[in-house]
Length: 415
Image (tube, rainbow, N blue to C red; front, side):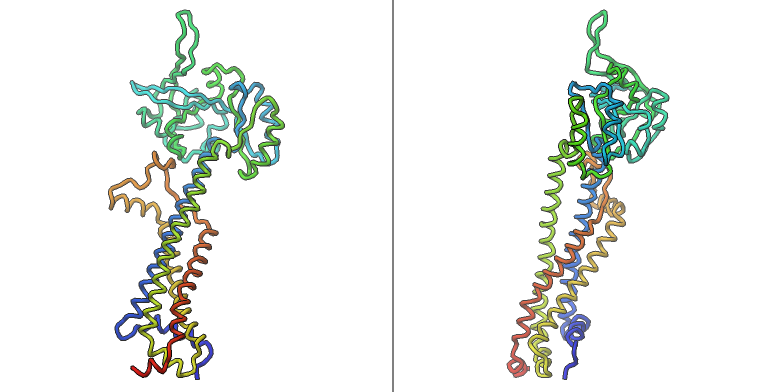
């Protein structure tokens, strides 16, 4: 007489003890490895995608702000009271009035296009400026020296370091007794920073606001006011309220309006990537099903003996379903551990792949971001685990039914 719960004992024995030819252990190991690889790839790649999307969003919003207020005629007069009024809106945590203009930078025969930002003195700070790191120099010294802060790629392209002078040429002409000419001035480089987005590092020039207003002859006006929100997702409520306050003095743009296409593409790519990578798990699960069919064939005699000892069709089905689920759970655990290790040693893994293959895995000029990072989305990870378990269970149904349908009399007749 078989004791209750014997199915789990038999299932574990099938995994632990191979048959005469060693087929069972191999059939248990291969699908386990396949499931582990599928889970690892899905979790790891999605973590990389999430890290890229979150960091890109953070860098772009840190540079452009959540709300951008612009003047109708290219400038905002009386920007201080307007800034104070808009900063009172619920959800706004900080504001930054600034000027922005395209220029040409030159240094010892080298020239490069750039974007000058005239920033308030208090924003010459690594945290407020939202930069990855200050490569050289001191941000706080820029207002004191009437100097400029350059992005790292821009400084590299011009071949300048802290202490060098760069000449800023404005495309707007000024009238002189000898006719119109371009306006240009030389400024010392106070600091070189890495913002973290290649395109920003290649074009950023930070200048004290008062000096920028003087150089571009803006008077007491600014071209833009940036506002940062406590929660970026509240923009649909905040933006209309801010536009009502601004009235005809300026118009309000949300971060979704000038980044809609980019973030829409990233979201679509994220969904499609999850679907495509899920196919790897599906293929791995097919291995579970095929291995169980081979196990049923190899254990025909065992099934017949169990049936003669009183095991029901339901018990036989349960044994093979448990075997498949054991393989699936073990594969999930191994896959999660591999993904955790790969994410923890991401930088070392990147360096190793670059060394072995001789390629640049993460080119900032292509990827936008200067650093690769991984962020685990626990909802996606849970979905991956549940999906793998469900597919594994489905893959066990047919082999389990085949085992339950075996006739013990026919099997034992030829043993």
